[in-house]
Image (cartoon, rainbow over all chains, first blue to last red; front, side, top):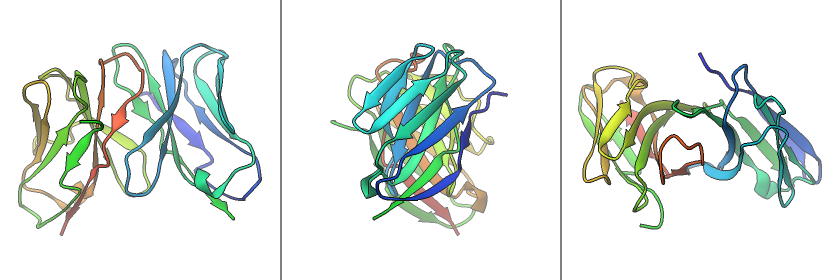
Length: 110
Length: 115
């Protein structure tokens, strides 16, 4: 059974702080995606990483794919209240359905 | 359309009744997916369509659940004889092609409440 484990499950921080959330698996993925979901909405794709060791930046968000393509991290610098939401990682393997982690719920206090 | 459209956005139904949930994917997207999200949880895969065919329906929880897609576009997820444990947000997503891991575009979901 493929599993994607995310940690922490819940994170409450002050505006301006930095944070990192993790996504781990024992399976190798051909690509991994990060999504953010706000209440009452569907998940919105933030980034796709495909190469082991790849780092992608999206403004204050930095995404890294592990060298072995089994894990990933999302680092947010100087978090803002607008970053509040549920962050989901999803792993894809050719010929298999994409699986999602349970998510990290982030709350950034002003 | 510009995005994935789902209807209704909310549905309250009595236990034992049948419900139909609709998904309009992005025009030209050949792959369509249904997921279910329970309160505070991640996404549970239900079924995947490539065109009008469903090569993977392994996530459907029971034979009360069925789905179809017509014209390579609109999809309907039907739940028969609803049970309280069916209460969840049902999310539809589409992508240009299936199996490529390029990420999905999701609709806003249908919140189903079975009372």
